[in-house]
Length: 462
Image 1 (cartoon, one colour):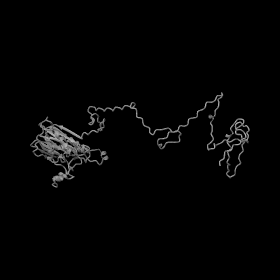
Image 2: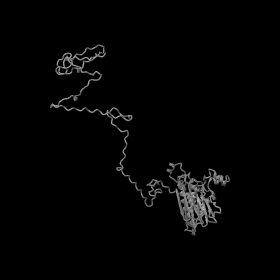
Image 3: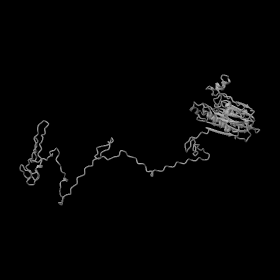
Image 4: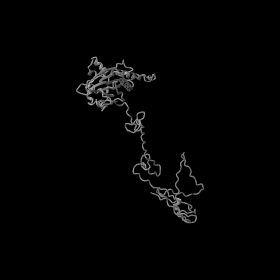
């Protein structure tokens, strides 16, 4: 059975301290409602560590002060009034204006989706931050204008012009200062025409440089008869500086012929002397300082092969050392062509000794191993020379193995030579080089063409 709360017994009014009588519900002096005075709470004894119950402490002044009620009977704490809730007056006796209560704190909006990891929740009102921070595009009006490209440096008169852009100057290293394009080396493709004689040399499709060289020219015999000269040299790739060797040999032989023929030297003797002069020029390349040999002891002597032809006074003279060749192709293709040289090679020796047929010898992997060349480490120099007196007009083809590898027999070479080769030697030389490139271009290609008989002075290529 539940019990009603007992009225607290007090002796004095809590408001005016007037004595009260038992059972008073209101103060007779000030009308204070005594029912709001809370009953004295029942103190729970505090136990000491040893279990003894301490005596209740008495008030210091001996006065029984009423105890405020700490509950409203429903388990809720008693209401507390703030000073601003109590009405009052100012110093002049006028009532104070009521103070509006502070607005309740705004509840944070409910998130539409779970927050991302790493967000702090220890702040009372976390700022609403966007999930992404878009980058603002730059204002095109404030963007700097692109700098205009520098104008290419115009080549000065006499300087090389880039073959790619046709505007930049080529520096000493062979590159365009405008577009940076590597320029073809001078010897990668060479063409020359001297009177009725013409020659073309090309690097080919497989080699990284052109190790061939040539020399062509025209002169006159003491009696005024015209003479045409062509020298073709092929550098030995297994030797050191083969390109220098072929260039030195071709120049020395060409100069020797062009100076000896006007003096009345017989063309065959002039050819022999030209080969000897070329040999001396190549041998000189091996005369390096001792310091150079110490730094590169593995290097060997420069070397090359040589073949040449002279057309003068109805005479055709050829000379050679190595495996470059001379072919005779008549204008009348109904007559047979001929090969006028014999290779200084392993295959030629096998055929000459009767040990192998020509087909078997040239099919061997040792076929192109040369047995004669120009160079300081060569065997005893044996220049080969021969003289012919053709009885009909034709064209003389002087070439390296870069061409005759694709037209080995005289008949195959005659088929590759254009019909108008005697009248258009430069054009025909280009056609023959193209024939080798179309066949694969595995080696450097060089060919010179001399019409026979030599045209009179002043006549040139059509």
